[in-house]
Image (tube, rainbow, N blue to C red; front, top):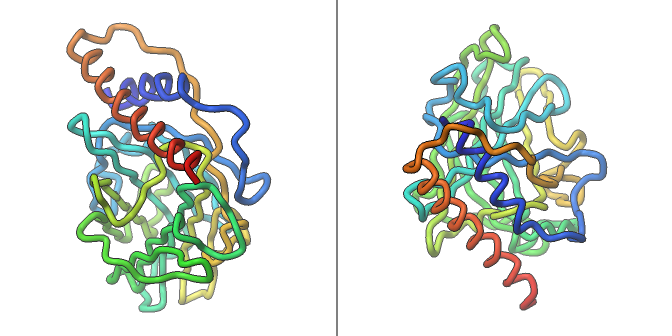
Length: 258
């Protein structure tokens, strides 16, 4: 059911996607966005073998992958979720870190600005959330908006034990973290293994401090509407599509006011 809901949400979102938006981010490194209807179980593992199969998988430099999708729940709450797997890292080091950055306004730039946010997890114990200030990063309090977990485990993508990170960020009416509501959006994912001093990143050779080097969430995937949906499911999907559409229009309205 999760896959069916994601496909229909995508089709609804595509109807309101505008044309001719400026593309920031690192040239040549793009991904397709897939909204998903349910929140993953945030426990640092694949709770089920199909937990992350309905969102796009991106290859990071080295041997790592990242996956990302939207979540819409209760007709009114929109969130983002990620899973990142570092296949070569199975050691627990204080110097290990994960970084996930995104650029809501897709403005790029040589330094993070107020539309840029970063989740940094150090030593598999401590999460810090940052917002750009025009020249670097400033710590902000996410007020419980971010849930995360990581662990060393196997997954459907790799049977050898390795680090797996899951993150869920939920949007609030007046949340501290401004989540991107529609492509195009800049995004950066970095995993660092202190024991081997190696970095896996998307886009390759990107830096959290340089939004121009980030990858790009470029567009939505167009998929056919599945058959056999019940009336109750159709009503639910219509409500979800309206929520996502309102978020999209609000974002682009703010852009036009600037």
